[in-house]
Length: 394
Image (cartoon, rainbow, N blue to C red):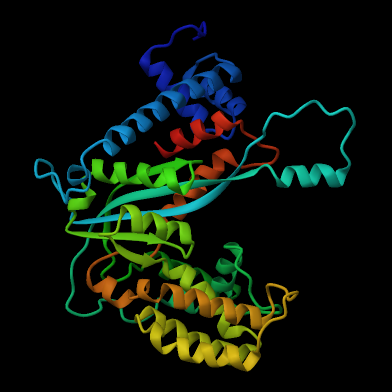
């Protein structure tokens, strides 16, 4: 079926935009449409339709946010709309991402040097924001339904790889044997991990995703309107999850102050892991880590802080020119991070209330978005970047 490029049926337009948003490129989208849908449409035509629908979605979003912000305060921040059902457990989570945005510049008269070209590319990265809104079924418990830290966090090799994947610095020279190195035990261990579900973990029902290049000042109201639309403020239990970034907790304070603030457990773990091994022999660090991470899982962060303070005093202050893997730097930064977030780390209490404690939902959403927006030599215009993020979130 050859399309003339002037008008499309709603079904054809939906297929075009879906392919343009989900494929790795507009070229790939055109190929998929030809192969799977027998639709002959060029990459540029796909791009034009994605831009058009993306702009429409942005206009709809902005109009909804403006209308919401114009409501009287009592209506905008009302606990619930009694005419609609309220979720048993409502969760909002936010995290940052990155996207390369190419800005128009005057035509250069000379070829840039390799160093200048590399520096220019490094300035093309722009921040983006992603938020996930989820509803859950979660039961309250008289006692902690899962008091022991999951075994996956005690596999030191896998944990170190996970932390490095988060770009979190670790002490140099760490090298752990792992259960996956054993050809006999590895398949059994992987099957065991895939079958286990943490006791008391709430069951997810519905998820929606928001994504934008808007700064926190503008993204907070977008999140608030979306949560209000889903009647989250009337939820029986409400949680706001994030890492330690100050902008996340500014959004929480301004727009979700009635939600229980929860620091993502894995981010807390990454700081505890780094501090436990910093400047210690590996065997000694392992013993400290196992004790500290169990205490953190049990919500007893107050028992860790004095030990970490003593360790920081023992190591001394890091010089200004010290690297990020300097043990003094690792312990000092971990101590500050855990102090600042201690009130958000009552994980035993959160599990008793049937609340989630990890930001895996928003992190998986960012990975999904990155498959489309990030790649080798993949750049976006200012408006194009916002349009594709809006549609990937939808």
